[in-house]
Length: 185
Image 1: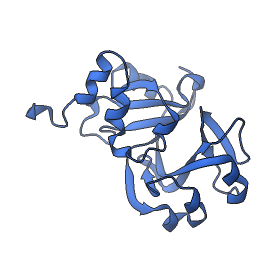
Image 2: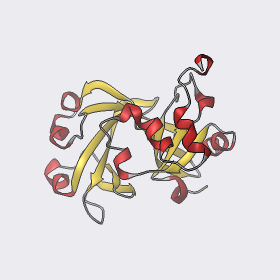
Image 3: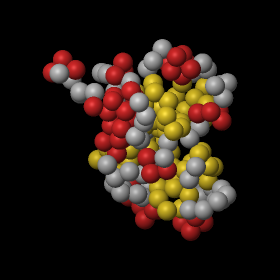
Image 4: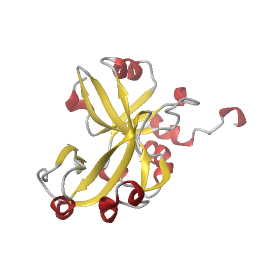
């Protein structure tokens, strides 16, 4: 797989990852190259308000305006994604896929504000060593599906795992009804 194949797409945790760090995770892939892969978990909001950590970005923060737990790596750093309004790449933004881009948080807010219609902040990220993600996909730990722009900025983020699976075709859509505890089925 190449960066062009995964950047901007979603990794959806399979039931095989139940009980792990990535249990029911939906990850937006930001990069995938020979030196590894990087993404953020979209469906883990925290209780920490964006205004508490990054007050200058509060006015652009999408609801819920909280910091999301982006993954287990680098949890003491922040990464922001923006919903880009229009074509091109605004100054301070690198487009990841579709209408979503990574924001350089050192960019002045007044430069970014006219070009975006939403922002989501993540503490940490999910990372993989070279070939690690390819191996995990190959062994059935992840479903690889197309992302929709609204996936990154949903107000009902905790329900994203089921929402994304439900819109898939065939047997994959049935996974949306997979019980949280299969032993209770």
